[in-house]
Image (cartoon, rainbow, N blue to C red):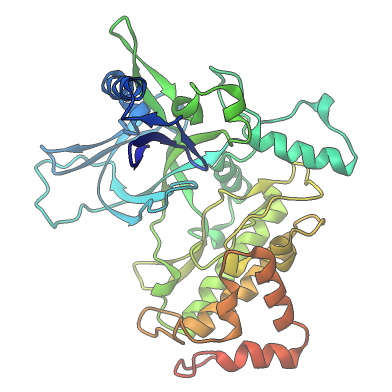
Length: 424
């Protein structure tokens, strides 16, 4: 995405990547040289490829059908694709920085006529579209046992750009591959059906690129296509991101859609049972338990299940060696104290179980569903300080509320929403 900043006669062009903003040198409109550079910028924008301007050519609106056509890479051959049709979403990419994650409700069935305005398609899948930091695999010769090198290895995985033309099949953080491994590892366990997402199609997104010959080829959508033209020094410290998209089932509802404490218990049990088996059988650690990553799945007979989603931050512990100083991952109100404070210890399943405790505290205070809003978000209570800019400060706040049973009762339990029945 591009932007322009004007201050008096000075103009700067800004190029946004997932985690950085890159600004051009000053262009002074009162000087001929500045005006010349600005004209060059406008000409460059008019001639460059559409994807370099921020357009995603794999999602287009069809006037004929009255809905969006979304190209999703095929599961078995990511260079080919399946077209899905969509006119609704459950999560929008509303932030300027980060993964730009959005979730679309879609179907493979092409409408036979234009979809009337306001009418929703009969959706069968959720399409997740996001940008993920590519974890560059290290050569075995580079592996060292000392702590300092473990930290360097972690940084290398996040900031080391692969060579141009690479095919990212070995990415240690590939969510599609992790979900495939989970499905294989849990096959035959019918009691876990619908407690984790299953991939219908998905992989890295390829954008069409026009060549000077007039032909078109597909290139993988990545940070290189956005800022690859900048000098190497500018690109230092910029995470290399790849665009991923996949279609999955079943379709779930947010945790705020539960109807009772009994349903909450069932949903959380299912999600954590799934979490336990995934770690036991697949050696995959989730690392981002939150109220957004546990969904409610309602069966046709009204039975509810809990589904654990969003494995963007997950690691395959059979592949990745844990660094002594692991990166902070998760959602602030639900992150473990060790995670928030950046402690020099390995992240384990206990960190995720600690996150479950915070989820229960959070919904107990602020209400289990949208019909019971709970305590006001502006109320000056200790749990309010679990959300903020300073992760270490949040860690200290949590630590102060957990020093004893009496303090936990005073800080947290006494502030549970009193109108909600059955908390006892």
